[in-house]
Length: 406
Image 1 (cartoon, rainbow, N blue to C red):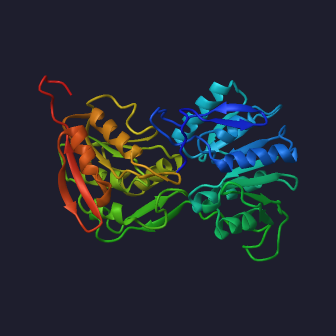
Image 2: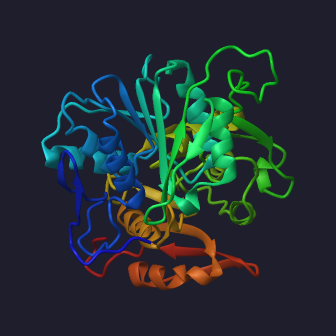
Image 3: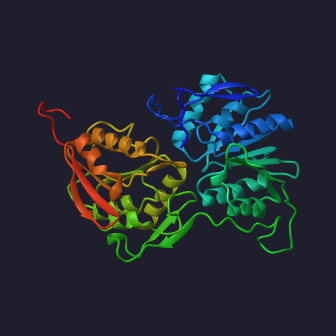
């Protein structure tokens, strides 16, 4: 976890000092919008005199530190590819604050540029997302492309380096500085007669990936789930979601249901099958997640009469007040490598604002996270629906205020 005693720490770079913030901005948040891995890479690019006037692509920039800094380099108009809606909002705000207008923002679901002269990769937490993105970007590389990755030492493993080596070409790492490390890869793109794992012949992109759900998950038993790379537990159903699926409410009166932080969409799809006429909103800040949810829903519930809406965004921040009957939520408790309950707290508050009086928020979480305390503080109530040694399912009801309002 990166802490600072300054409300807005400055990132000092060759191309100017930057005031950077995360999104949503919160003066109480002590997590920085950049770390030693970002600073190390920027120092190295400047020291090496890397040409930045061609097609520069930055993949996986967390909060826009890399993209904002490079957008200040003479002649550089970087293309910034991110899976995170929140990260892109932070990047846009940081670029505007710095006065940089040349950068272009793309999502991981958009077609990448046709040609890349400099490829910068901020190593993601998900090895699958890295694999998918390297496969997608490889056709745009050429023999002279400069490929540099960066991450904290704890984020770069042997498996990380093997992916760069197999998909792009020979790979080496730098010495560590401030617990950060760089990755240097030389493109080897010539067709190879060797095995699919050899440079020049990386094999097909294995993403998206599908698997069959187990038999103890209610209406979705034995059905297919679709996962794009980077979605939580993309190769198997995680035990928390499995427990949630076993205890979801069968509430026929709910007309508008939200799968908040939908991931691959199994929770919302289950609700769609038990509430065939209801409108289901799938929302997540990950473009990969919403694409997965759309595919999972289409594979299992696409012919139901009720509507389905798929939205990449900041949870229910844009929802009409008191417009929702039921919110289903399996909140994350990590932000990249940091452990935090800020996301869960924000989701619970958004759900309360969006729920109509009498509406319900159902949450699954690890027992030790103490979500019942937060729910009681926000809703004035919290009911234990189900529990096992590791997980709890909780319900909170939106009660009308004594004044008749929300």
